[in-house]
Length: 284
Image 1 (cartoon, rainbow, N blue to C red):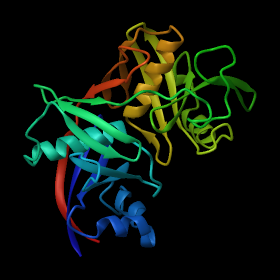
Image 2 (image 1 turned 90 degrees about the vertical axis):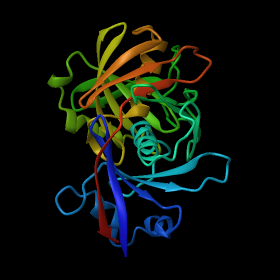
Image 3 (image 1 turned 45 degrees about the vertical axis):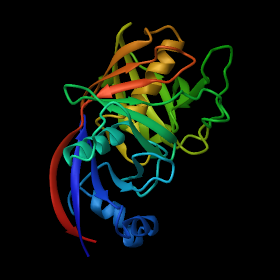
Image 4 (image 1 turned 60 degrees about the vertical axis):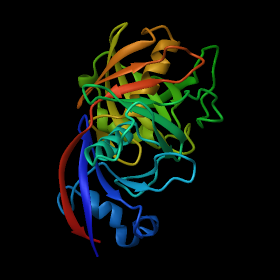
């Protein structure tokens, strides 16, 4: 069966987008027969992507419902770069009339988005989750405002912190990102037993109160060029600990996201680009 697709990227975090509102693609991807998702995301033998986004009808009075799959076939609760790519796709196809209030139904709940004059996409990512049992994580508060603890890797002890933006994140502060054994640490920490559902891992280098540098090991994907929910989680942790202000630029390998948490009892706001790479047709 031939299906049209479009490939979009947000800071290099790339996704294959299928409009599944009038076909059986949702059922096909749910079954994932013969590792369909992994094959499509394979960069040598498939289209190549960090994940797949399905656009579905919403039953919750939202514009559409977004379903996302990681390149390993797993299904995360939310994806900040992915939802920006979804909005960009809908806008490019002239579906969006009111650019100030675009409501998207996700596995993590209702997400409200908007498109600015320069076509940057702003996303209300909702309130962060810091309760250990709701993240979920076995890390405890330990007299701080965010869950935290120590993890030993070989002969090194790492101080780690946790937050959720609908999906779990581990934050590790480092002096120089370039000097860490990124792949070894990322692979180990993603599956660490302090996170029952595994976790995204973010290594954070502090620049100043308004700027941080982050390198991402994404749950179910491995190294990616950006992670929107992760950038939000990093700002939540750094602001809570007084390491940054409540608004900061987050510099990822793929580019910059602007993250703001204007009220610590309220939602986190993310703003950044999302662009089309190409469209095509593939047999599924």
